[in-house]
Image (cartoon, rainbow, N blue to C red; front, side, top):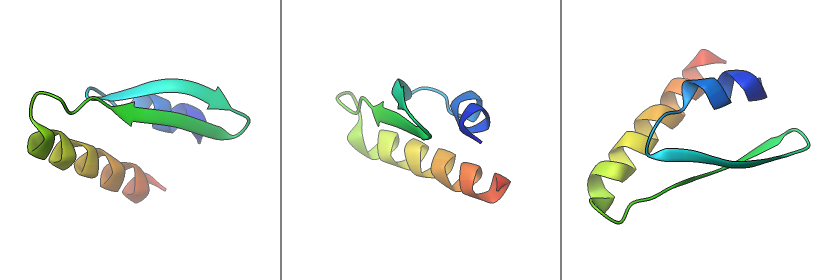
Length: 51
């Protein structure tokens, strides 16, 4: 599952590191926070739907 999530995410989500079974991710929203939030939400919902 970790690998599938890591491969499914794209910019602006950035994989920071792997901690055991967890992925530590973040998104840089400095340019357009609203657009970044929408993009991140879309990616999260897509990952959830995959499982």
